[in-house]
Image 1 (tube, rainbow, N blue to C red):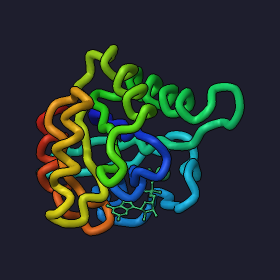
Image 2 (image 1 turned 120 degrees about the vertical axis):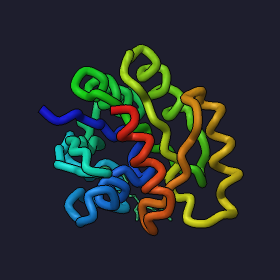
Image 3 (image 1 turned 90 degrees about the vertical axis):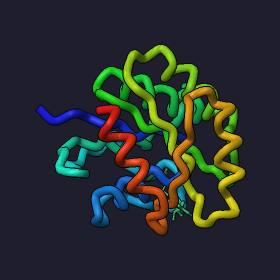
Length: 162
Ligand code: GDP
Ligand code: MG
C-alpha cells in the first residue's frame, strides 16, 4: 500500500486549499466557513515519482468536545492511520492555543510531523513563519496554498519523511 500523509490543523488555515495545490486539481472542498470539509477525505497524490495517499481532515461533530477537542481528535485519528502528519498553521495568525493543543497530541506519535506555515503569500510574511519555530516541531515550511509558493520544497520534505 502507498504511504499515507494526514493533513491536520484548525479550520480555515487552508488545509484543503493546500491539498488541492498538491493534487494539482480542485477536489478538496475549500470554504470560507470553517468546518466544511467532510471528515477525512483521501486522495491519491504524487511527487518526484513517489505516490502517496493524502488525507484531508477538518470536519467535526459539533457538541461535547468543542473546536479544540475536535481538532485534537482529528490529529489523534491521523496518528493512528498515517505514516506522517502535516500540521498546517496560518502564519498570518500565528500559533494559537488550539495549534498548541494539537502539537501536544502529535508529540505522542512516533510518526514524523511536518509543519506548514500557510498563507505566506509573499516574502514579507517570512518573519511570521520564523515565529512558528516556537511550536517545537522543527523547521516551519512557508507555503501559500493559494498561489503555490513553497509547495515544492514542502513536498520534498514530505517525501523524505514518508
Ligand atoms: P481548511 O478549513 O483548513 O481546509 O481551509 P480552506 O482550504 O477551506 O481555506 C480557508 C480559507 O483560507 C479560504 O478562504 C481560502 O481561500 C483561504 N486560504 C487558503 N490558503 C490560503 C493562502 O495560502 N493564502 C491566503 N491568503 N488565503 C488562503
Ligand atoms: Mg478543509
